[in-house]
Every structure is written in C-alpha cells, then in structure tokens.
Image (tube, rainbow, N blue to C red; front, side):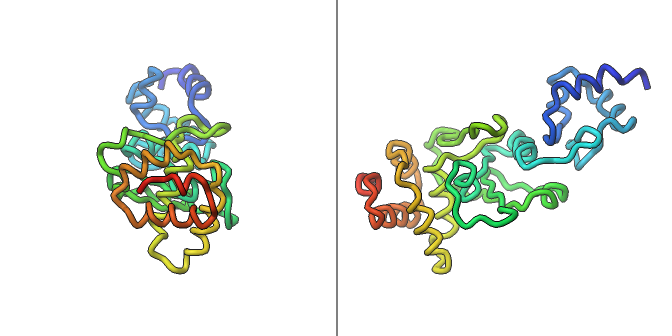
Length: 221
C-alpha cells in the first residue's frame, strides 16, 4: 500500500485510546473506508466486530466502549447503580462492578463487549415520550465527555425500577436512597411527572420520607 504514515499519525493524534472506532467516525477525520481497510490489512487497525475497530495494541476500556455504543444505540447511557457509583454514591461495591446500561432500542452486544464489560442492558421505557430527550443525562466530570451517564435523580429511579419488587433487595434500596439527602427536587419532580411506574415513584418517596428527607416530603406523586 502507499505510505501509511500520515494516516497512522492522524489516528494516533485523534483516536481516543480505548474507544472502538467505526467507519463513520473515521470519515469525520478524512479517513475513507478504503483507507481504513488498508490500515486494517496492514495491521495498524484490528477489527473487534462488524464496523468496530481499534488501534494496534489498544484494548477497549469501559468509557471507550460505552461512548462507542452510545453512537449506535438511541438513548444509551450508564444507568442505575453504575451511574450512582460514577456520581460518587457508592454502596456495596464489588471488585468488578456491574455496568448497567439503558437504551431505547433492543440491541445484541458483540462478544468482545460482553467479555470486557460485566454489563446489563435494559431497553424497557421507564419514562413517557413527553420527557425531553436525554433529560437528566450528562457526562461526568473527570471522565470521557462522550460517555452519557444518568444524573442521580434519574439513576435512583432506574435502579428501583429493577429492584423494587424484590424483597431480597429491600435493604439495598433503603441504604441507597438513604445516601440521597441532597437530591434535586425540581429534577426529580420532572422525572416523576413522566414516570408511569407508580410503584417505583412511591417506593422512592416512602423510603425518603422514612429518612426524613425534605425533598421526599415535598415530592408530588
């Protein structure tokens, strides 16, 4: 092939380490499909799965992988307990914490993602269609700005949605909500107003009231 040095240098300059690349992402930096395939054949890129590539010698990271899938799955974000952890609310952590993801479409994750991430994925709608897109979802300071993470108020509702029906997780629910003294009532109220899961909403309110939190007393359900 022609001298690949300029293309390789371009990749080294802009490609986020640990984040898989697809052809559309490469095209934004002037690398055509043909050039990408030449780089693949020459060993400068390696293919993880269909339209997922990494620089030679690189490995997918948590932040890079989530950022990659967020470009492919509508509404994808870190959710539930994993989001609370990233927001500094840490309870009962394991050596390798599970990564909770939530999106708006069914998706089959490739084998490399399942191997590198201990992930769960939920695509059942928790909020109605009138909630603004990506409400209470944003990047976390100090982490990749391309990785969307649920805000605390959204994350606790997402967590309770999967645990409120389990008696075994009741203590976990109480302990997690008990760490949320400084929850933002205006954000939570908007989420609650658009959440059809009343069992989740009332569970959060009841636990918060038991903790004597002011936001729980003021929350309208």
